[in-house]
Image (cartoon, one colour):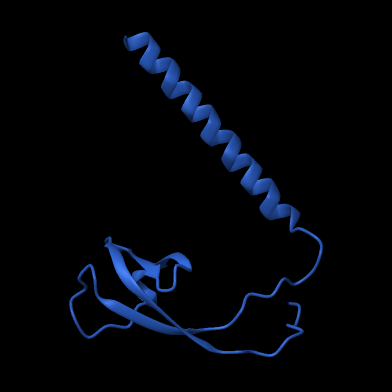
Length: 99
């Protein structure tokens, strides 16, 4: 595993819960920084979850580990995208036949 070249700069992030599902929670980040979906197991809570509750966590910056791409992940992503496109075409053909 590659070591990180830069030290941590821990920053406090805040957001608002906008989605609650069985296994995950969707959070809109304050400051128009985007959206984050996390597994329920990563959320520490003493209260029942409700849309609109504020959350906070500590975070650092993401650091790129090197210039080369992980070919295994690229291959898996290509396979996934190809299968999704095949399913879309099959669904479209099925809808055309039904009409």
